Image (cartoon, rainbow, N blue to C red; front, top):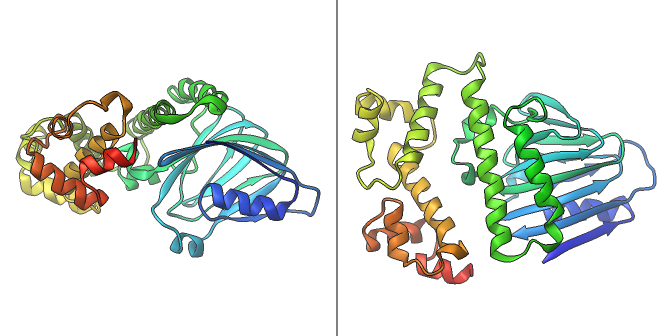
Length: 310
């Protein structure tokens, strides 16, 4: 359902933005008349909203994070006015056309000194296929007119935003996922192309390994030995590389395969594809094994999940 809510006072606005995204504190720099408009859609696990309001700040505090559920990434496309995003010791000025990403699992603030409009896409962190450590390097940095891919993605997001009143059902969800996929490409490009003092050889190698795994998920032989050989590593060195993350090699492969299966199960274009064929498509050829893994991860069998998300 298309959501369009207005607030003629700041108390209502504070409740509205917390209910529509994640719990947030909100402040006005100085008392004044306030109005705000929030319009958009929740597309299953994603939300895409246009926020138009007067000057104020929103703050995601450690206390609010501790009381919240699963974490999300939020992508802002500044449409008009200017904003200041602060997270992870960085701050960036958002000008019209700028994209920026931030993580609801860590404290942040977003301030607007004048009237503004912005498009916000909120989505589960695992959809990017990038590690949380990698994305953390890019929070509160702008990807706008000066970015070689950002300047191509921003118009697409703008067009999707304009379609929100009529963008409904499975196709709307698929389009929102396409935006996330494009964003993941932008983020990966930024990670691979920036020199960065903290970008160590091991970090670059881990990114290459992640990229290789993503490209080989359909291969049932994908495993530590295959990955290590493709990168001229011993399996021990590969496991040590992953030891710096919160995933083992096997867990990363499993989560990425299951995430792709989950997306296919709720994709209307795969409505008639047998559940077992979806598992096999992503390297999980044994239907019983696929079903057990999926139920453990998502709390439902693949068939139950598909039925619940029609």
